[in-house]
Every structure is written in structure tokens, then in C-alpha cells.
Image 1: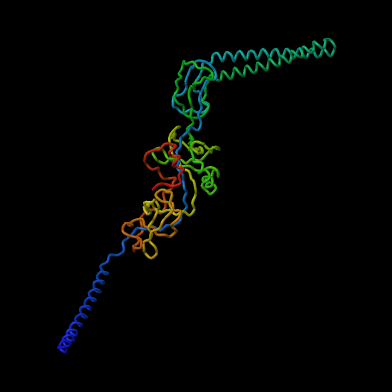
Image 2 (image 1 turned 30 degrees about the horizontal axis):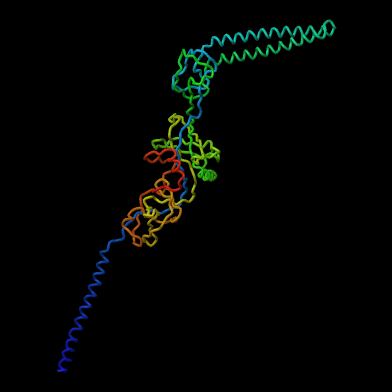
Length: 423
């Protein structure tokens, strides 16, 4: 029996083992075939839009609120008292320096002028008589025909006559000036405003209420409040080429109207205050803008852009290529030379148009993924495609303002003090 069981076991092993080996070989062959088919049917790496970053020269500007102010304002007040006879201008009309705007009744002042001239003629006649008396007294005194006292009296009369002539000449000049004051002339070239005084009104010398105002609108001042801590960087930028040709201490300024459109004429910083406002920690700047079309009027709210700093080799990243973590940290996806996606933290605190100014984290030549980032993960392969977006931002001097609710002047100054711009 033992021999029979051993024979059966040997026969079963000889039959089963080759069958198991065949099945194993068949399984291995099917696995290799499936892997080959899977490899053949796997999709290619997804395409992502990339831009190759290059350093560029950028003018970093600061945007500040401002108010327009007239270049010159002249209030027309009478210097003499009288009745207005004529008004020679239309309200709101342009006038030139020296144009007669009003005329006060000149009759009384013309009479006073004629009286003063007559007094001058009488004083001149008395002077001539005193000169003749002095001449005779001097000759007679030499001949001892008159006393020394008589000669001195003739000399005193001559000196008194000379003083009377001088006094009369001054009175004539005063009367002439008052007569000229009856014609009220425009002291400057500009445009007149409304007036409440018409013909027949009584006006008095140096009255509190002006007859009219003449405002010079070309050029136009813009008063700006600049955070004091920004003043040093702006002055440093002027020495590095941010100034215009008129001088190293005059920065060029671009104006944005209240609706956000760019004013076509550029201005320049004319004067900087020498003290800091303690309540706002700001310094007053005054810029001058040409206003040939007289589009600007005094008191208008505007915004101005002033060059704060010049970066010669700045790295600018399109905003669509930069994201933020829940903690607010900036990150970007890059495509390395091996075609793999990698994530990199950035230091980007301010924007320049549609770009982030990257202080750290990106280098020249890096390929930044700006589109298709939702299809890839760090470490995955990707196929680069050139993204059709500009590599340079719109010039800050040509870009218009962004829409949105307007802020008060104090809120704008506070916002300008912050170094970062929220995404």
C-alpha cells in the first residue's frame, strides 16, 4: 500500500507542476501585453501656457489725491469812492492785463487834478519871484546896501518857495493817481467771474467785497499731500534719472481726472513744503500743469502719479501666474528645464499695472505658468506653450485709473502710506 501511494503522489506531481508553470507563463505574458497597451493608450502631458521672464527697467509710481488751484487770482477792488458809470466786460469772459473793466465817475477827481496843477503853477510862480528877490538881495548885500538879515530873509523865502513847489508836485501826482483809479483795470490776464456790481452802484475805496475776480487758468496748480516717508525715495529717484530735463529737482507728474481718464498734458513738481503736517504726517507738494484748453477749473478733485523709484532690472510676473495661499503667501508654478512642474514661494508686495513686482523667488529665464495650471500638479510633466500675453506692463504714464468707489482724501493718504497692494 505504501508503494501504491508513493506512485500516485509522484504521478500527480509530474502532471500538475507543468500545468502550473504553463499558467504562470501565460499570466506573465498577458501582464506584459496589458502594460504595453496601457502605455500606448496613456495621454500626453497636458499643455500649459508659459512666459519666459526677463529683467526690465520699470518706473515705480505712487498715486496720490490732489486738488486743483488757480495759478493766480486777482480781486478787483476800488481805490477811490464813487459811482460806477460803466462796465466794460461780460461775466465769465477772458480779459487781458491792463484792460479797463469798470469806470468810476471821474468828474470830481479830474477837478481835483486840475486844482492841484493850478496850485503847482502858483507855487512855481512864487519860486521864480523868490529867486529874483534872492538874486537882488545878494548883489545889494555885496554893496552893503541891505543888511544881513534882509539877505537871510530872501534866502528863507526862496527855500520856502522851493518846498511849496515840491509839495504841489506831490499833490498833482496824488490827484493824477486818484484820477487814474477811476478806471479799474485787470491786474492779470485771465477769466472773470460773476459780479454783483453794475452801473449806478456806489463803491468805496478798499471795500471788503471785490467788484470782480480775475482768475488765471493757464497754467494750473495741483496741491498734493505726499506721505513724509516717501519723500526721500522720490528725491533719490530724481538723481537716478526720474527727473525731466528742466532740472534734477523737478519730477514729472501725470494727472488722472475724476473719471479716471488721463489728462493729456504732463506737469512738474514746482515747490515742496519744508514742514510736515503733524496731523497727517504728510508733506505738501504743488505741481504745475499746462491748461491751454482751460479744461481744469480751481477746486477739482484729481489724482496724480509721481515717479517714486526707478528699478533697472525688475522682475515682473503677470498676475494670472501668481496665486496666494490661505495664509496670504504668494506662490507660482514654474516649468523647469526637464519639463516638470514645480512650485516656488515668492515675495511680491506691490503691483505694476497687471503685473506683480517680484522681489524674491524668480530669476531671469524662469518659465512661469500663466494658464492651464489647474491641469497639472507639482512634479508632473507638462508641455509648454507660449502664452499670448504682453511681457511688459502698460506705461504708468499712459494707463488710466481704475474704476470703483472714490475715497476721501484722508483715506487716500493712508492707503498711499502702505507698502503692499492687496491682490
